[in-house]
Image (cartoon, rainbow, N blue to C red; front, side):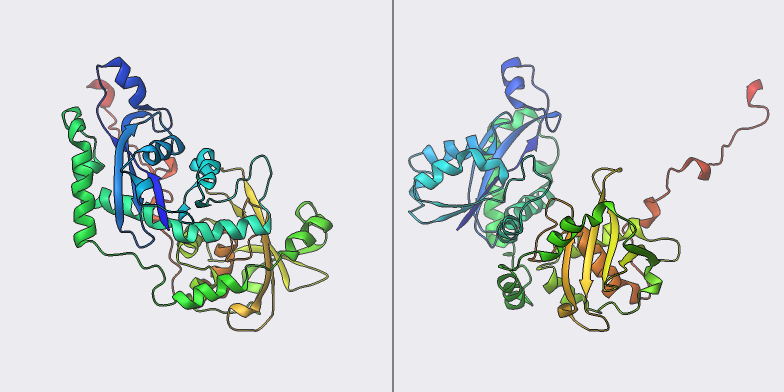
Length: 367
C-alpha cells in the first residue's frame, strides 16, 4: 500500500514567458513547481519525483511517473494498493486496468450529500491517507529553504534539495503512528459501525424536520442535563481519531454565548432527540442542521444512539462530521471543564472598530 500526492514550492517570477505560463498556478496565484511524493502509511518516503509544472494536475503527474521504466511501476505488482485523493480521479480507471487497487474518497458531484456507504468508505480512505499530508508539513517546517519562496537560480537544484530533505527525514525523522495508545479500539469502532445505516437521516428527510420548527421546543444546553458523559479518550475513539476533536474545538468557539451555553431544540414527540444549528467554517451564510438521539443519564459512547447532519458527510456512521463532533464534544465533555478552550481567543475582536480609540490632537489641523 502506497500513498501518493503532490506538493508545491513557490519561486520567483520568471522573465521566460514560456516557462512562466507553465509555472503559474491559477489556484495559488503564484509561480511554483510541484514535487510528487510517494510514501508508506507510516510516513516513510519511498521516492519523490519531479518537480513538475504548476499546470500539470496530480493525475497527469502520476501517469508520467508510472510511465517511467525504472520508476514506480518497477516497484509495484498486481494487487498493490494506491491510496489517493479526489484529484487522481482521471487516472483511476487506468490504474485498475493494470490490476492495481485504487482507494479514493467518494465524489459528491451535484448531490447535496454522500450516501452512508460512500461516507463510510471515504472515512476508511482518509484514515490511511493523512501521512502524506503530514510528511509535506514536516518537510516544510524543518527545511525552511523549501517552505519559503525559492530563488530562480535554485530551480535546477530543486529536485536535489527535495531528495536530500526526504533522505534526512527518513533517516532521522519519526515514523507516524496515529492513535498509538488506542489503535485496536479505533479499528474495532470503525469495523463495528461500517454496515450501520443512518436511519435518523432518513427519518429527518421523511418528516421534513429541517424545514419545520413546530415539532421542536427551544431550550439551552443548561436545560439539557441528561446527555451522556464521555472522557476525552472515549471521544477520540468515537470520532475514530483526533482530527475531528481538534475541529470540534474550533466550531464550538463560534457557537458558545457569553455564558458558555449553546442554543438547541428537542423533539416534542421524543425528548431524547435534539436539534442544533452549526455555522459553516467556509461560508458565513451556510448553516448545517444536526440531529442527535441519545440514551439519557448514561456514561460512555454507547449512550449516543443515532446522529445525522445535512452536510456532505452528514450520513456517516463511522465517526461523524465535524459539526456533530462539536456538539457531542460540548454536551458530553467540554461543558464540565473548568475552562472551555477557545482557539486564539484574542483574535475574536482584535480589529473591531468600536475598540479602536483615535489619537488625534486638537491642534492637528495647524500642523
